[in-house]
Image (tube, rainbow, N blue to C red; front, side):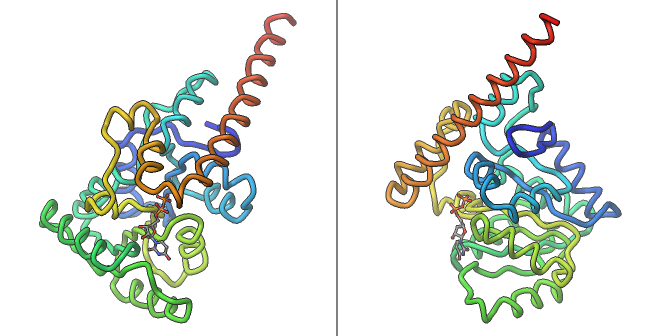
Length: 251
Ligand code: UDP
């Protein structure tokens, strides 16, 4: 479904896991993307990010306001699908298809804890490797080489947008993985490094307020500009939708 400037796939978590099993076994190699409001707005001014998302095997809506807008526009997305809540299920899909996983991103102690946690949850999972996301440009080739040599089939990249998307795109041929997923700050949330918003805030589209409370200096500017921009573009889309349907009924 086309929403603002992005083609979203109307999928549930189970659909995503099913598609991952396909990609990891014999399906097409590529990447999935989880698009939140900030990324949706960044796509308007960042053609490279937009191209990366347009080329995704699967694009999911990682934002309650995006799901609400889809309903108001008349063809609803079934649910919000967050990167954080995808990790465990995708790792289970990897274990079921005998595929190994590589985790790249976040601080060293966070990614290490992430790996320990997931190994406890899924003892069958083969973790091909992991590395923190704070490496210099001069070390990029080593990171890419290590991922390739690890033989990982599934790669999570948590470097923040748009750095993580650029990493996957720039090195796609050399990474050798079957499926890659930019995951933002998901490792921080899963390990409790950053506390996640209560469920009621997540389902009421208020997660941004929670994160703003935790990191006001870093996020205030970002949320103000992306929030205002989303409301503006959503209002235009709604206006166009209502106007066009009125026009159709009067013709
Ligand atoms: N990060 C990283 N290397 C960098 C910059 C960021 O590994 O050079 C990590 C950071 O530790 C965090 C994630 O990337 O885990 C980005 O988090 P953020 O909350 O900005 O991402 P979002 O989920 O908002 O896209």
